[in-house]
Image 1 (cartoon, rainbow, N blue to C red):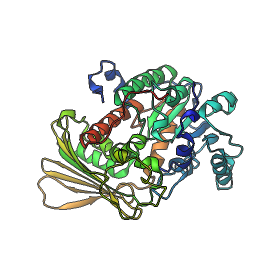
Image 2: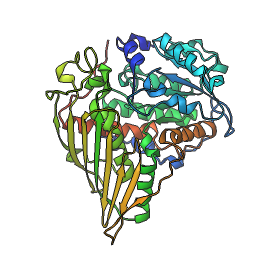
Image 3: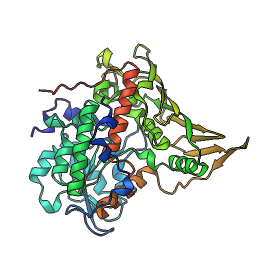
Image 4: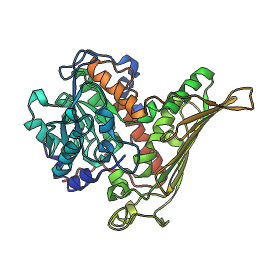
Length: 438
C-alpha cells in the first residue's frame, strides 16, 4: 500500500488544512445500504467496548483546523472531544510532525491535559498501523484531511477509509468525503457498508447540521404539521477573506464552493425533504472567477497560483425538483467579508412557512402556521452545540453498537456527495475523472 506521503500535495495540504456521477438509486446493491439508521444496531466489536461508559481511544488523521481550530469558523473537534467522558487520545497523524507534536504539547497543558499525555504522532496512518501497539491503537479515527487524500476505492494511496476499516477502526469522516468520481465513491460506500456490518463498525460523516437545533426543530415542525414540504430555498453566503489555503480555491482539490461548502445545505435539503433530487431537473448558472474579489488574501495564498480554469465560482444559483415532486433552489456566494456567514433556509408547504436562520452562529426558527397571518419564533434547545451532539451519538454508537442517532452514515453521505457534484456540474464547474494518478 502506497503511503499518503506519495501524494505530492500531502504535506502542504495536511499541515495547512483549516476547514472545514452515477445514479446511486439505480444500483441494485444500493437499496441495502439505505436502511434507516434506527435499524442498524449491532453487538459491539472488539475495538469497541460493551459498556456505555467505557474508555474510547481516539486518533486524528490531520492536524489542521477542522480538528484543532481555525479563525475561519466554529469547527474544532479536539476541544469538543476532550470534554467527552472516558476518552483518551492515542494518535495524531500528519506529515508535518512538528505541527502534530505542537497540538499534543499545547493540549497537554489544558484543562483536559491528562487525556493527551503521551499521545503519539505519526507521519501517516500506515505508520500508525505498523508501529502502534494493539493496546494503544485508536478505537475510532477522526478524518479531517483534504478530500483528494482519501475516499477512494481505486487509488491505493487515497484508500484511507478502506484501510482503516480493514484494521477494525470506527471513523467519523469530514466532508467532502472524496475527490473521486461519484460512481467510484458509490462503490466504496457499498464496500464500507458491507465491512461495517461484518466488523460491527460505525462509519459516519460530519454533516453536523443534522444535529443543529434549528434543523432538528424544522424537521419536527414538518412532522407536527403533517403536510408535505413543497418548496425549499437555501441561501449559503460565505466570507472569503480568511480562506488562505490555495487548495480550497482549486475546484478539483477542494470540490469547489458547492461540493466543499454548500454541500451542507444540499444535505440539509435531502434530510428535511426526505427525498432525493431529480438529476434531470437541475439547472444552474454561476458567476465565474473573472469577477475580481476586493479582499482576496495576498499571494501566494488563495487562488493566485491556481490555474484559471480550476478557480472556484463567486456565485452559483441552482433550481431543481425532488423525486417527491417538491421544488428547490440553492444560492451560494463567495462574496462576504469578515467572519460571519449568512445562511438561511425557507421551507414552504400548504399553509405554512418555516424559516431557519443562521444555523452556524445564532440558530433560530420562525414559523407561520396554517390559517394564520402571524409568524412566531420557536424556542430552541441550545444546551449543546451541533458538533457536541454529533460526537455524543458517534461515541455512543462506538461503545454500544446502537447507531439509531448517528444521522449520517457514509453511504448516506455518498448521496449528498453525488448530488453536490450534479449541481456543481450543472453550473459549468469541472468534475473529477476516473484516471488513477501514477
